[in-house]
Image (cartoon, rainbow, N blue to C red; front, side, top):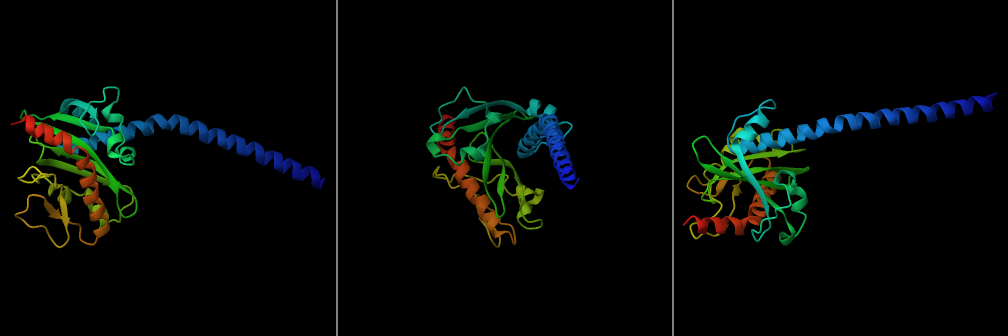
Amino acid sequence: MKSFSNTYIFVFSAIMVVIVAALLSTAAMVLHPLQEKNIEIQKKRNMLSSIRIENNAKNAEELYDKYISDSFVINAETEEQETLNAFEIEMGLQMRKTLEQRSLPVFISSLDDGTKKYIVPVFGKGLWGPIYGFVSLNDDFTTIYGANFNHDDETPGLGAEINTEWFEAQFANKKIFNKKKEFISIDLVKGGADPESLNEVDAISGGTLTSNGLEKMLYDCLGSYQTYFTNQMKNNK
């Protein structure tokens, strides 16, 4: 009787495991499209925030279609990669490659005042995990118009401050090239940026490692587009 009881328990447990696995698999399949849609909407929201367009989950897609007028993918030598979709490019994956192998998305925004802004994604490492976002440039290709940063695991009140309005607002009107047209990116200065500097912003107090990671992220990612930005500046003369 004891042997029969153990067999029964084993069979019952096995059946339950199969049933639960099937339910979880079905739930994952059903929820996957919704999860992907949420990721898409959040990406559009972040991009819109980088061009200072207020948005929410309900109107993000409509505003994206209104303000993002074009997009394309280039390599580091500015050759357009016509078979690739800019929105589908994951900058995190690209930054694991050598510069020559990277596919670099560019998004063009047309604002209500008729000006164009050029948006590029950025991706790097914070203290506890990845940090990422978008930076928009004016059509001089050296002046930052806006920035949006996000994180997965940075410390609340410290590194997580990169996703606050006060921090992101510092980047507006900063320069990523100096007067000699040399790429310099943006410096995050501990203890306070020089008010007269065109490429310095305040680092996060108590968030040194996150600030360092964000500074490196900007240098590496924006630097990937250096040839493209330089060529565009020459064309604007």
